[in-house]
Structures are given as structure tokens and as C-alpha cells.
Amino acid sequence: MKKLTLGSLLSVVLVLAMSSLALASEGGGAMTGGSLTLALICMGAALGVGLAALGCGVGMGHAADGACMGIARNPEVAGKIQVNMIIGMALIESLTIYALVIGLILLYANPLLG
View 1 (cartoon, rainbow, N blue to C red):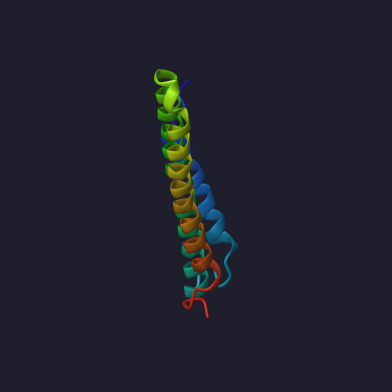
View 2 (cartoon, rainbow, N blue to C red; view 1 turned 90 degrees about the vertical axis):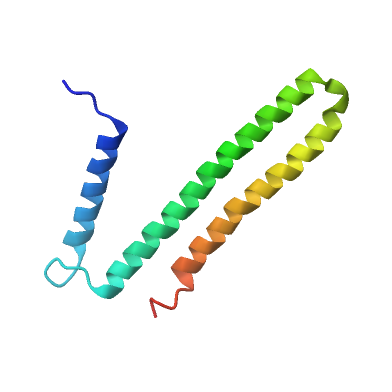
């Protein structure tokens, strides 16, 4: 039996998702311009917020790892390291919130959708 890889699983999910979009549309199976635009905007907003959250989560993990290592090696400066880590994590989190705001603008305040 073949091993199921992440790439093949992702391609199967994408094919199933795209076929459901095509079959659910009106007008003989072809998507109209407005519904295609809305579908692409929804996919772009979801991918943008998801990738931003993934990247910021990895960055926060590295920041916490570095802070824990620094405190373990030099406990006398734990207060300074903790303050700098919290400020850095707040700046990292602001990038995720920025991506969320852009996604919401795409979904709800888009002039292309009329």
C-alpha cells in the first residue's frame, strides 16, 4: 500500500473543494464574475490570515525559547529579558492583527463586490 503524503492529501482536498464550488454555482456549472471574485477574495483572506498566524506563532515560539534560554543561563537579568520578550511578542502579535484587519477589509469593505 502506498504511503499517503501531505502533498497528495492537500491536492485531493483542493480538488474536492474546487469541484464543490463549480457544481454549486448557477448557470450551467460556470461561475459568474461576481461569485468567482467573491470566492477568490475569501480564499485570499483566509490564506493571508492563516499564513500570518502561522508565521507569527513560529516567531513567538522562537522568542519564548530564546528568553527561556537566556534566563536559564543568566538568572540575574530575568526581568530585563522578560520585558524585552513581552514587547517583542506584542509587536509580533500586531502583525497578525494587521493581517486580520486586511482580511476583514477584503471581505466586508471591498468595492469590487458592489
